[in-house]
Length: 182
Image (cartoon, rainbow, N blue to C red):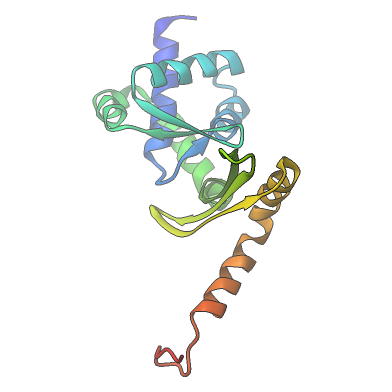
């Protein structure tokens, strides 16, 4: 693998991350790059790891899934070398986002995770974000890992319903003017 190719793959990843206002998962990036046949999985992972090591990309893990976000340092590097990305590849990325944006955004902005606390219970965190704003951030304890996993698995399908229920139950209006009643 020549150095110029790995640089191009890193720039493609940075370009993808720079074009969205939410994190992208490893599988989302891989899906695009591998479907287009730009490189193989192992080379792609090498490029991602290189970006993380240089602090161009921040990675967080949510339920065993890596989520990536471009850093300020990554944005600076991209601005200096973006001209090395062929126009056709940039257009492929933009077309991919146009076709997949709703699915990509939903995967990144509705998520749930769990962790074991000091008392031997599992704390489940369920989140809905709209761009950079958090709409819902629920945390509660459950007795078993099985319960925690079930809640996390159901959160994506039920999150809109739960959000609507909370808003309608807690935010009662007496009329259309937005005046609360007690």
